[in-house]
Image (cartoon, rainbow, N blue to C red):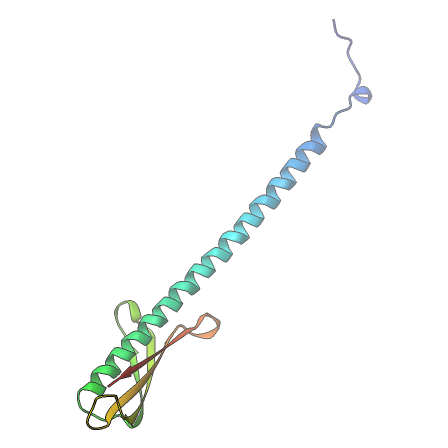
Amino acid sequence: MYPERGIKQQIGAGLPIALFIITVLALIVTSMAQQQESAGASVSQQILSQRAFYAAESGAQVAVTEALSGSSCGSVSSSVNFSSGGLSNCSADITCTSVQADIDGSPAPETVFTLLSNGQCGTGPEAASRTIEVRVR
């Protein structure tokens, strides 16, 4: 029926097409892996930044409690280190300053505290830092 062809007469594009497809698929897989790694690092940094925000907020709450307890802070700096829970290995540096201010309607000047809390989590290039400022009278 069909005449047999010799090896020299057989031509085809199967092998070059297969190599091309394998190369393209390898490039796609490599780029997807790099994108996944980048997304993972981004999420990790975002979580660390959120933890730093909560460390700063917790430090501000500690400073508000101390300021409203009757102690004058003047120009006091302190530090809070967190060792358990979601804020482990985080810290908050707190700076407190106070001024006497005339508030409308008050008979005497009132003390206004300005509390600055800087929360830090992580070390090295993966470190995150967030700052919160609170005013209390």
